[in-house]
Length: 239
Ligand code: SF4
Image 1: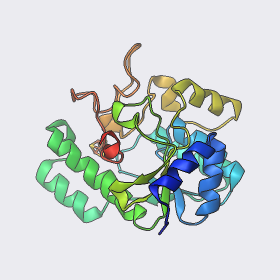
Image 2 (image 1 turned 180 degrees about the horizontal axis):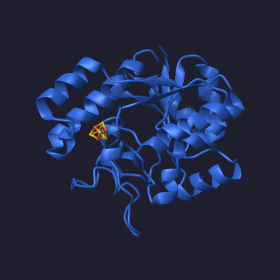
Image 3 (image 1 turned 90 degrees about the vertical axis):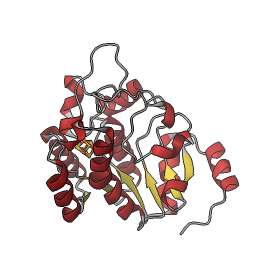
């Protein structure tokens, strides 16, 4: 367990500014107990490229909900092969999924927000929590302009939602365009759904392409009206 105080974290945020500086600090400080949570969207693959240039043994894990797009599995393998790395794939608890679909059906998420959150809880939040219990810190691809609740996040912070471990958001200040530019300039494999109008990619049944002028996350759970939709992985930033 780390022993950083809020004051020390603040000092780090003042001292470390570029994504590479932030990542180097995180990977040097916790070489085996710091890992990137990756959904293999544009932000995550950009971070993976930076991480591999700093420490090729850096850890990457992903949450396979069982409902992802084929394009997402394709980019996972492209990344795996390009950087010659093992990706730690976390699956949901089979008993929880079996019970959920037996009672609520396969496509329960369309029926109510409660059902959607139940599915995100079982397929994403529970496996994430299980992994985070084993770590001193996690790295995310959050960007402040994605949603209002993400706009308060710092580059480095203490995560009260997950036992006070360190949460590292190296590209929190980047724009969508900066993310795409990095990928292009560094020839990083990316999810081909980005070329088909999907800036934000989640599970296949819960994500659609966006139309010109729509917010970048409008395609996530598009049938819900709340503009600040989250799956529960990063829900506490607004508080
Ligand atoms: S995004 Fe949809 S399919 Fe994926 S875990 Fe959440 S509700 Fe379930």
